[in-house]
Image (cartoon, rainbow, N blue to C red):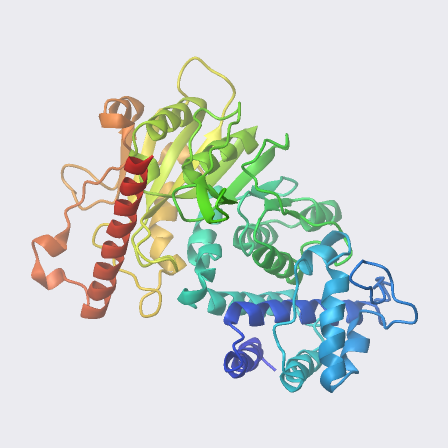
Length: 504
């Protein structure tokens, strides 16, 4: 059975379960639980014989029940009817109390498939395949396919945890991570950056045994505070041969912004969550639930602010080793916002080599109306002089039109950017823009030019918008309609932020 056939069969069951009120995200969670149990069962049998321990059922207080069934695939797949549903719910509760990756996978797990017959259908579907014998590339592609389908469900909001893989692979192709180096993502989502970096290292290096061991068990480190997303990330990594099923978790459940844990990494690749402000939910004196802006008071931060993206940018700077490199997706406001934003930009240019900015169009992310950029910078030791000398900007926004369904951004669309970036030797870059060729998308600005701009703004464009002057260059009507909707939503979000700021 091909990977596309398996994806299709698994996803067709999702449509059946939706009639019972089981959403895509809930269904994907159940698939994750069951797939993990099935693979663990396979590894406990010949030729692997790993002897992975699974507990017996526990009561609500966490005590093992005498003569209870073992929480494994063999027991689960042998039950039927109401007994199956009851055992599955108890199994999930029991496994959520375990340590390591096992406990992380099942944290806050619940049975969302209340119909035993349909639950059995999902179990039988997974039981037909030998997942451990299946190639890593096939298993990974199947799960990635499910994650992408889940991200397409805009109502669930799952898209905010799924960065388009074409963009991720482009970022990794520019950074070109090396073996025996550490890679971190403080907002891991479903693990896209880790998987792309893993694939890059395997494809471009002839790894020896030590390098393979390091890549599998010591390279990747992340944070993800949303339990359901964290479990998908762990499962995604494991299916791509990262980590051991009975090993420790690479993904920390803590809020990465709370404090500096002291760890430093060679690379940080990240797309921090959308949304401008950090906030926490509280209950006021009247018992009403309110949201309160959250500012992180950290001595290693240049500025104290409730702006989530500014906080992530400052945190990522802290995370880097002295020779560390970062590639980070950030929204437009980071480039032009005054106050704390201006100071963070100045400090970033002073303490790192902020050498490249990729400007992205709308229609790329699953959250509509997002105007984002990728900032590439290298950390540097303390110096009186600013480390940033020149910033190269690639405008992949002006006159570019994408939609997620009809015209998604592919990696081939960014080949010219990678060529201009010149990862093999950044010192030999050549601008494509000049006075003679004013359609060039690749242009250099000096540090002095940036500092002289109002609020040290990096919100820079130079290409002419052809849709304003040439009606023949208008995009297709459906693309135009989508862009109008996205611009309206983006404007509304900006307006809300202004109102919130004025109300403070």
